[in-house]
Image (cartoon, rainbow, N blue to C red; front, side, top):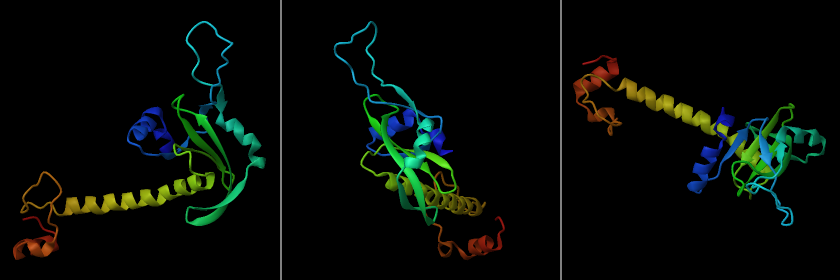
Amino acid sequence: MDAYFACEPVLKSFRQNALHLITRVRCSTVAYAPFCSVPTLTGRGRPRIWGSSIKLEKLFALAADFPTAKVWLYGQQVTVSYQCFEFHWDSPHQLVKFVLTQLPNGRRLILLSTDLCLTGPEIIAAYGLRFKIEVTFRQLVHLLGSFAYRFWLKSLPTLPTWPSNLILSDYPQAVQTQILNGRDL
């Protein structure tokens, strides 16, 4: 699902807010090499701003020559093969780092980072942390969502926002009893 969010508008908003993004992109992604203009060659029409296109999936043909590194991924330390490339993708003026990754089970990933200072293993490990973060967010949504549903009784005043007081002992004894018994007032 996260490959869906790797697009020009998302990267543009991240850059406008001085943020960096690490995400997975589709295997069919096409990047562009930096463009070198030859001043003696001028043609008709608008000047080129993009370099030649590169299908990133074809770069996996060199996977046997990829360096390997041990990274902490999915709760265990694994050895992955990776190769880093800096290409243009969403803007002809800014580079992004692509990390072609082959996991021990043979699965291939192409990761994108807007932070060019990170190394390949750092990008892979940071991408692996997203699963812990997503599980935490999902648990938080379920926990808070259940509170929002269970504590909206007829006796409680309706609030336009999240209630500021969820301490049971602050309510009158009659309301406490009905909350504990699970009955509406």
